[in-house]
Length: 247
Image (cartoon, rainbow, N blue to C red):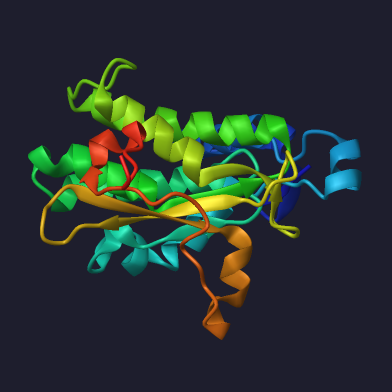
């Protein structure tokens, strides 16, 4: 239990409330609620077997503050790539998306929010070993995206291309697998895609697949995009249609 010092007398949180001003009381209650709600460990067995301990949200925000130019304020911030090798339940991934969406709202006109938010989603990657965490991370990313558009009155139901493209990007970019081996839960190589803008046509994207393991040998000039089918450029809100170049 945390200890506090008031009037040079140490007191625990349970015994100090009466001596605090209303402002301090509200702050202390908020701290207590945050401590109670934020779950950093799911079970001792998971800590033992997988080393699973979640990063507190306060620390997530402090770490992301260190990369604000890449994440929010710098040029081409929407397309700056972020990768989480042990994604957990998505606390870093969701916080990164939330900041990018807020920056898009500040820096772009509303008519560009749907396409730019999809490009932001396409820039965030993660790998998670455990099935329940993986599902929570994917759902959390999609909920953050949908919530952003619903707050601004943009249609983003499951019947819209905006939702379908977002779901496709989340499923493609947040993989269940083992970062150390480079293989997914079915024993196949983890495969991602770059989602490159077609610079001459706003809102268009070119998909280039690659294996995660190929990143380890990229510095040797052996990076290979031709591991899967090639795709035709398309509007980013149609990326879920997966139009092949040879179609």
